[in-house]
Every structure is written in structure tokens, then in C-alpha cells.
Length: 407
Ligand SMILES: Cc1cc2nc3c(=O)[nH]c(=O)nc-3n(C[C@H](O)[C@H](O)[C@H](O)COP(=O)(O)OP(=O)(O)OC[C@H]3O[C@@H](n4cnc5c(N)ncnc54)[C@H](O)[C@@H]3O)c2cc1C
Image 1 (tube, rainbow, N blue to C red):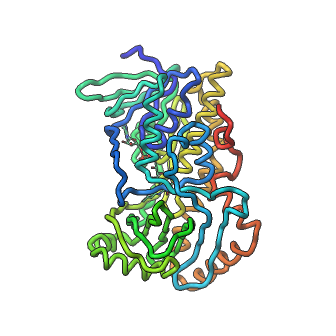
Image 2: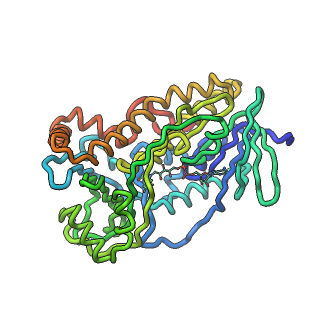
Image 3: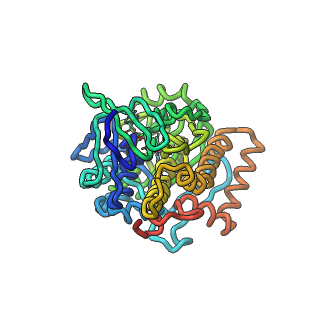
């Protein structure tokens, strides 16, 4: 057994785990991070880089952490969101002017965001990083949790007061803790591609519900748009096999001509979609966050934004406990995190899952109800405000980092 002691061991150095390391740093905590994949950086941006939509609240968190400043002018602001259904009546518009903000959210290349977070991680001197290294076993004792880590041909044991599972949808931390998860295969895949439309997107994000599933068009720099097109799983190979011209033609048919003709398409890739929601998020000396706790359908661009709010709340709870001389791995401390996050996690999961189910069903009365809901959303300012606040990631009790207040 090793006598290495850390206060917090973060398993998983994806966007969520790496952001947590940044948020916890600088507060007198001894941190460890374990990431299985080699950190890769590509210096050149390409036409095909995948984008993420970030809520306005996520910008606040990254700005308070000093990460947003590293992105320069890469993020493309979203000024408006237009929600509609193909071939049916009903449309709703959300606008930044209703909220007096510069943008409802932003679209940023995942590659650029990842590099900015990684640059920050590499500057932290209170983080011991094990990478590439894989967490194998986890045991929880009274005073500490122990994780065994394989790094090359070496196995070592780390001891920490709290272990955070930020290790994605197939979380080994979740599994080793014996925490079950509700899983639902949507039998859909998301096909991702970048396209160039004839007309300027004017910083509008489009969410269009079609009979095969939802489709999003996100504004990107240089007049491009990122397409997230949900298709039935059995139709995925056909879409991937189309020529660029055929793909653009099908996209045009589904999306329509709001942006004129689609003129260029980049490489397509596909992601099978399933819902994974863990039954518990907190145990003595352990907590799971991000996709390890909730892997959502990308329909509303909520997944990472939700995970980043987990980060902001968990960092606040742990730093506060540490300041008060409490044990950050004690169950009553971690339960504060669990209680605070429950509402947002449930709400975002229900909203996302509900949208997929309601809008993937072509039952005629349901289509009429959807049209009425969209018209209602468009016309009733209170309803629009509530949906916009959730989209902006500012619903409910906000953690300090999301209010621009450092920990
Ligand atoms: C098509 C698509 C579009 C999306 N668009 C958006 C969007 O616009 N906006 C948005 O907010 N979200 C979006 N999402 C969701 C978003 O991508 C995820 O929510 C987010 O990336 C999850 O990050 P994570 O760090 O929790 O998990 P992951 O990215 O899965 O990271 C987990 C990390 O843990 C590591 N790991 C796993 N096991 C171990 C182990 N045993 N030991 C060590 N390391 C381990 C892995 O190597 C990995 O790096 C989208 C998702 C998809 C599929």
C-alpha cells in the first residue's frame, strides 16, 4: 500500500474532470488526476472540427476560472434560437434581447475548448497528473478511499479523502461502487458534419424536429454551421454512405431553405445515442459527475453544460468544507452536493428525454399538441423566459463560479 495522500482524486480527464481540477486548484487541496487517454493536441483547425454549444452560464464558469480568456475570439455567439417542426405548424423563437445579454450561448470547437482547459491543467502546481494511466480498482475505507492505477507497466495505489468519478458514461468508478444506472437505448444515432449555407446564419441556432428525430444547426465562425442530425440507428449507415451532394440534398429536404442552399459539407461521423442516468451520485468518500452520472441525448446541447454545473457546485462544496476544517469526503459533506444538484440534473434529464420522445413520435394528436406548445412558447413571455433561463444554464440556485464569484 502506498502512503501517498491526496485530498481529491479525479478519475477521468475529459472536459468535465479537467475542468474540476482547474476549479479545485489554488485552495490548499492536494489533487490527483487520472486519465486513460494520452492528451492530444492538433495545432491546426480544420473544416471538420466538432463543435459544442455552451450555455451562457458555462461561459460565466469558464470566465471565473480564467479559461474563457484563453479562447480568444473562437466562440461564436448565439443571438437567437429558432425551434420548429418539419412539415407541421408551430414555431418558437428565443432571443437574447428578451434577457438583456450579449448572447444566449456560444458555439466553440471542442478541440479549441479542450486545448484551453488542458493548458490551464498543465499550469496547476497542486495537481499530480497520471496520464496515460487507468484506474482499475476502488476500495472505500473509513478514513480514505484507495484506487489502484496502472501506468505503463507499473501499478500504484493512491489514497485520497474523496474520489470523483468523471470517467464518462461507462464509468468504472460507478461500477466499482456498485451503483446501478438506468439505461435506455434511443435506437438513434447523431450524425455530425459541418456545412456551409448560401446565406449568413446571423448567429441563429436552429432546432428542427423531423419525423426521424431532431436536427440542430449551430452557427460557427466563417459562416459555417455545425449539423447534429439524429437518425434512426438502422438508417445511419445509409447517411454515412451518401456522397456529399446526396447528403446536402437530404439535409436540404429536412431543414428547408431558411439559410438558402447548402453548398459544402465536411466529413461525417456518427455517435450512437443512449440515456444513462445513475441511481445515486454520492457515497461515502466518492461522488460521480458529468457523463458518469448523466449521459444525455444531444438534442438540446445540455450534456456538457450540465456536467460543468456539477463541477462548479462540487468545487464550491469541497473548498468550503476544506476551509471549515471538515473532511471533504465525509458523507454529509458530499450529500450537500447531491441535494444541490438533484433538481437541475432531474430537470435537464426530463427535458432532454421528453423532447426526444415527444418529437420522435408522429402520432397526429401529439403533433397538434406540439404545435400548440411551440406557439404557446412563442407567445407567452413567462414560458419563453423559463425555457430560455434553462437553455442559458441559469435556472435555480447558481453556484459562485456561475455568478462570476471566485471560490
Ligand atoms: C453528438 C454529440 C453532440 C454533443 N453536443 C453537445 C453540445 O453541443 N453541448 C453540450 O453541452 N454537450 C454536448 N454533448 C455532450 C458532451 O459531449 C458530453 O456531455 C461531455 O463531453 C461529457 O464529458 P465527460 O468529461 O463527463 O465525459 P467523457 O468525455 O466521456 O470523458 C471521460 C474521460 O474519462 C476517461 N476514463 C474513462 N475510464 C477511465 C479509467 N478507468 N481511468 C482513467 N480514465 C478513464 C476517458 O478516457 C475520458 O477522457 C454532445 C454529445 C454528443 C454525442
